[in-house]
Length: 597
Image 1 (cartoon, rainbow, N blue to C red):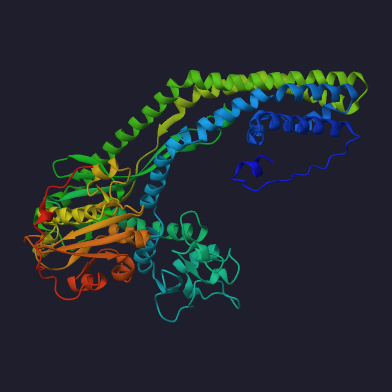
Image 2: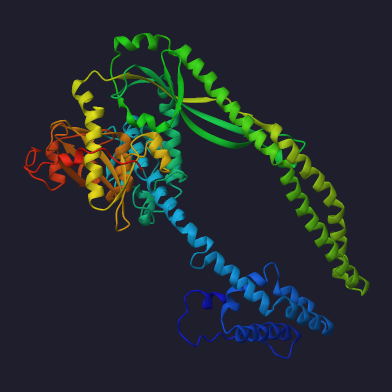
């Protein structure tokens, strides 16, 4: 009844029929309740009584009232209880409280902008589907698998070597060939959990079509098996290390990717702690320079780098001492993890009094409930009710056990902080990162050119009435509630409520721009909400801005990770013909200092 009246009902009359057997004591209970509701509704001249009825009877079971009404005296008592519990004043007070919470200017209304902002940020923080697609595309060839089909639609895995059985799906007739053993063979048990035709295709980007294909995502059995196969077969190579190029670096450095765990050890003395439990699991990145300086950084840092070949002379000494540096990195991460464990222990100890009080109160409620139940059952058992006698014995046993359970729970609370420990740090991968020696690549990462391009892109958005937030550094991104490397440089909130993640690329003249693996994945995630703003001739007073919406669909979908894009491709995707020569109109108004958000 409350829901019908609560959610915007505008048509009168609304008729609700309750079928009640009137000549029964149970019927008397319902009649008392319904008559009371109708009386209050008329007195208040409002249907608000139906809005708050659930709160008035919160924790009260109508069934219990029915059971009490079995006897004549019980029915009268129930009627008196209902009459006292449901009053006009209670309903008016609750209605006022609801209005203060949910009405115009209420607490909820004040929180809605923040909640909407949080939800919009979640869109920019999500992992799917770009990172999953990138993971599958880059790892499949290394496992001897070939992807056949459309990764933005449906596809299947096939052995990379010709002559092996084709699709990664159950074989209807005959045993599988022994030559199929490998990554494909390891995936088949998980794939075979799904019925045909779903098991014959895989999908990454369109979960709404998952009935026709297996939607790969974290937690899904086929994806988890695929991930396990990748970790097993490629993990040793990752731990041996590889060379990467950082176009923004001046000196070589090491990058370590590690898994850190806080665990609660087992203690057989406590029922709640018979098995160890993971309390906190994090992937962390660590940059380490040749002098021994170390700083934690996001794991996405690897997606900003390019694969390198050969070892430059200035990085050879760092490579030769890599094992010693790895040991120092292990000690650093272990100390950091122990500090996290100590903080967690201290937090538990600080809140121990409150948690003990909460637990004690819960046991007190149970004790009072059992006492009330015992009293009621004792009366029934004296009257010869055999079922009540059996229930009474059970309640007495529960009362005996309650004190022991309370003592054990209290002891467990006090013991828990001592069981929190740091697990051994597990290295996942190592990288030796070197500066680029490519002059053209250095130009693509010229800081002054990028700053000029950012000013132009920002001025364009502000000129169209947008509120622009700079998120191109980890510090600015964190301040905006985004990951350290969100995959774009500007977050633009347009007057119509739409949001754009804008990746800005600047060139002093013309030339190729590079999209990193992280930007590729984010463009795949956001699609039409992601824009590429390429600014040519930044070193002149007449720059040219080319804007491409959904660069993934128009420029990047066929590439795997980091990719170079020429000016003609960008201008074509932006709908601008010809070479990016300076336009006739001067655009030096864009060279003003950007505002800070």
